[in-house]
Amino acid sequence: MESFDLTILGAGAAGLFCAGSALAQGRRVLVLDHAAKPAEKIRISGGGRCNFTNMATAPDRFLSGNPRFAASALARYKPGEFVRLVDAAGIAWHEKTQGQLFCDGKATQVTDMLLRRMTGAELRLETQITGLTRDTDGFRLETGTGVIKTRRVVVATGGKSIPKIGATGLAYDIARQFGLRLVETRPALVPLTFAEQDLALCRPLSGVAVEARISHGGGTFRDALLFTHRGLSGPAILQISSYWRPGERLSIDLCPAQDVAEALKAARQVNGRQQVATALASMLPERLAQAIAAEAGLAQARLADQNNARLAAVGNRVNRWQVTPVGTEGYRTAEVTLGGVDTRDLDAKTMEARGVPGLHFIGECVDVTGWLGGYNFQWAWASADAAGRA
Ligand code: FDA
Image (cartoon, rainbow, N blue to C red; front, side):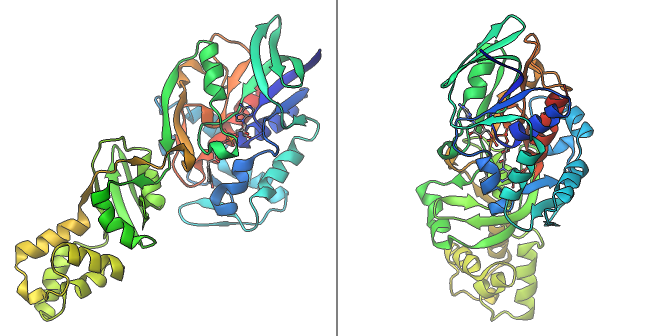
């Protein structure tokens, strides 16, 4: 029977990084994945340019049943350390907004770097994992190509998002099998979908983007919002989707830079002949301005003919748009999975399961979910390094 010091399940961001960190400790390491290629999510991340970290990484940028859990690993492996690896590999990068670092070129450069970093470890793709049991001195792992004996196992098979490229719930099944608790999972960083009556506004505006401010469930984000034919998307919506639960109403400010009612009153003073829609278009994209004016029955109406209450209603509609999404686009398009292996059952320094020596969980399968903007990869690197060094 083959034997290894460490077997890592999942050759994604966390699994590949963990292999490199464990090799530095002189271990014999095997990485298994059922997919034909490693790290498919890195390939499609950041619009193909991989937003590989965020310089503003801090524990408060993560959602978790225990918001302090991630602090230890994040403090011991910081974004600057990953940037040093990227620089040493000669990968050109740039900072977008808010500390988000992206490759100038293809995201696959990051995968290539991770594969080079784990030279000496064995990578086996297209390998099914069919069973994992405790054995004397470690674990017995059953795979589609035979049985492996391994002293330690790191589970890095990610969450449920994007099943089309290989996501499964294996990590949760293993956690359950070994008696670990799970925090309920749900899709996050995902577009929101609307009922037919709300789509009457969104559908014709599909493709229109506007800067919006949304506060909900403890999260506040000011970023781009995009109307789609199914509802709303864009960074502001993806961010708030992690805080939103089905049935909850959102209040969206479609013009955070201005008090629209006051601006309309001021415009009426200066030029009463101006149409409401035209005045709105100085604050909003034209198609959105027209749609809101039409919805209020003011498609051709002039400012001078509107009393304060009417302008206040229009302003309210823009600055406090109340909408109740019916759902999300689900795991099919969600960037991440909220919830997962309960952090109460993991050691924050080593990611090892309490009560199951030698079994570790890292990356997205753990109940630690970052905001949009490179935080999820930083968690993958940091949790992987913590386990790899252990
Ligand atoms: P990951 O999903 O990367 O890897 C899991 C691996 O396990 C996969 O290779 C899979 O094939 C394998 N596996 C699963 N089930 C298995 C089974 N049963 N048997 C064997 N192998 C199995 N984050 C960020 O910080 N910046 C960004 O730019 C983006 N962009 C982005 C875009 C899109 C479209 C998505 C879907 C996601 C992002 N993310 C992101 C999120 C980021 O991709 C994610 O958080 C990390 O990839 C998680 O790393 P893991 O290694 O934990 O899982």
